[in-house]
Image 1 (cartoon, rainbow, N blue to C red):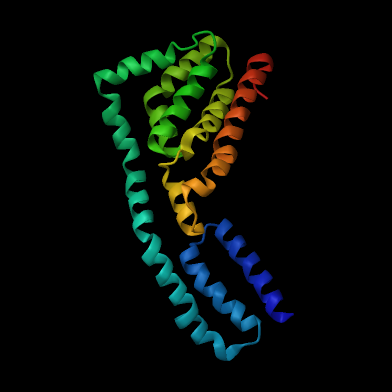
Image 2: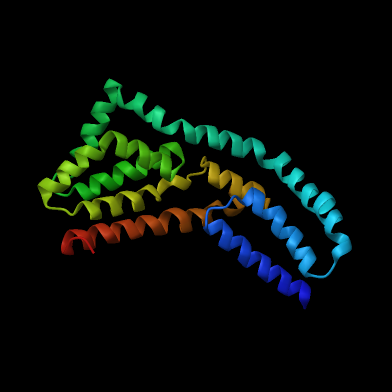
Length: 216
């Protein structure tokens, strides 16, 4: 009974302090130790930290630290990468093609731009940052000219960036499957349905409703 209550209390505290901005790297060992203490097993406090917690942590870092490291480095380079791509002559052709895709409804071309760049980078935040840094001013101008609420444009941009961001090469997908011990063949179809098909259907619905009724 006390052990179960200790788990619930420390889990709630972990979520509360994480929500308040405290580092999980600090909270995790503290809450793990607190769970042992609250359960009444005082003699197991040190072994729980040195053997169980640190053993599990070292095993996790050994398996997944390279993935996290590469993902962090890639994340730091997306905005700089976007600046370089935006300076190339070929990007002007791509930009103009996307911007003129549906001149009467910039919501559609914006959605295409956001989800395409998210798919290329394998990241919704990466695609969004590149798209907004290179096309943001153009879409804002188009929204004003078309009488579209900028808030609606922003909503569509954010939702569309969550469409193709989980293609098979996405770092998040690779990490998730590695942690779960699954392969793309076993699980990717289900992941794609939840993280791509449904979000894209939602984007289409928002564009249709937004075109008909404006911002909502």
